Image (cartoon, rainbow, N blue to C red; front, side, top):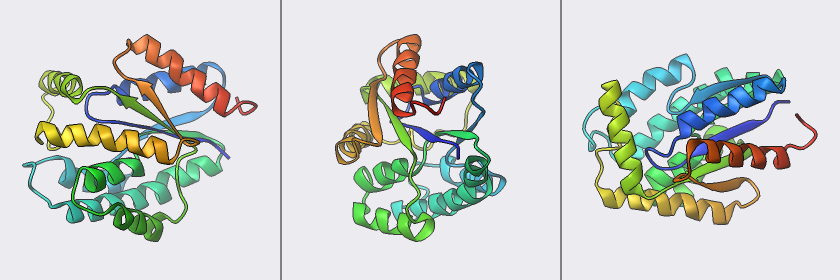
Length: 213
């Protein structure tokens, strides 16, 4: 069975960069892995992603957004993540269910118990083996993400358009999750250099999955 690792955090934390670096490291030591992301990851989920991440910030209310995300997530799990894990391949995902708890729950207007109930209906007891939260002040994260989106001419900016207070709540929400699931979730300082974060992430993984690499 492969290991399921997710990266979480607010906007501009460096999740995409660190997922790629981790895969490079795992490949160098002979561990097979794939990269994926949410929303998206499978063909069906990528179609739903287009509805979620584009448009105005008020395009969907929180509950509609949550239902779309879990429709995409179920397809992602069934079509990609679960089969790869069963093949012994490690799965590294840029976001998973913790993002829904924080974005639509903690920083949104849906009770956390409601989000968890929907999760249980859609995925049951499916959670990552390890989640890395890349933590940094939202002001810095938004500055980074806006620069990236401008350079890439990205249209997937619906969440970045939300007010600063929303992004502050995101940070609080991810920190809160770590206190509730300390065995699964680790927080890494996202203000450090890319190289420093990379080393810290792999140090955590070596300790967590000793004997599996």
